[in-house]
Length: 342
Image (cartoon, rainbow, N blue to C red; front, side, top):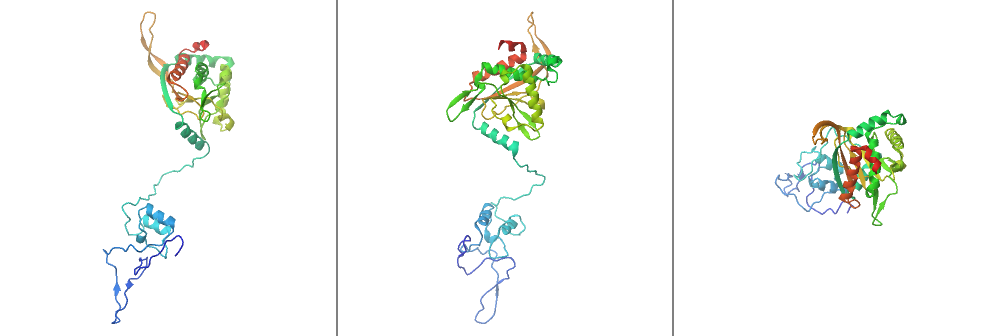
């Protein structure tokens, strides 16, 4: 017995191999030798077992191949013999249950590693551990766009890239003061909700290496100018590929801006360990109902409009809390002067 090949049962007939000559029958008493060929319809005896290693047997089984049908050059059926048979280089037709083996030209395989691998693992972990809820609001942000233009003309903001994202970031920090549950985390081991003592504001950035989410520690304690400088530094570092791992850990809330890609809205997935994430859509001109004025009349005007979407962990945040947070952010973007009331 050969170890790993199985027992070869004694039989008066063996399997034909490639190049075998027709079988000679034993000479009769008259001394005349005759040639014997098996009939086409003769059933294959089941007491004969082909010799093959276990991995080769598994390969054949997975493709519905009977090893007795596979031609081979030696006493043992090899992987190459089975693969040649499957690929159709042998005339014998495989079982209908055999899975087709094809080589599709034009496919490109990209190794998943580095930032892409880390992002994939984080998104799967978040999506299947935290019950996500997403809410949307569409609003007129014309007043925010006017504020952005005034800030660009302010000498104190010279050298700082002022954009609507800056105003959104400040609005988020203010809204989190009123709804701290969105600036929290779920501690599974201790079965506790941890309310964070400060806002470490993450900003999702698309880079050549993939998506990175560095954060600004203590963003809630910064002035608008300080926040603008921190955002500019964070963005420049991310685009240059110089974001350090420490800058991507410890975040408590994240902003992602899909508007830069011309997209109206999205359903963002939470950054692992966080409870909330705000998605900002593109800001474009749309017809909008304005009014009523002092006389009660309404009119349609072209206004700057955007859509905000907030996703939150429903273990930590109730619908009322998530709605209040989103409404607060929207109210500040509709009228930035309301920030003085927070």
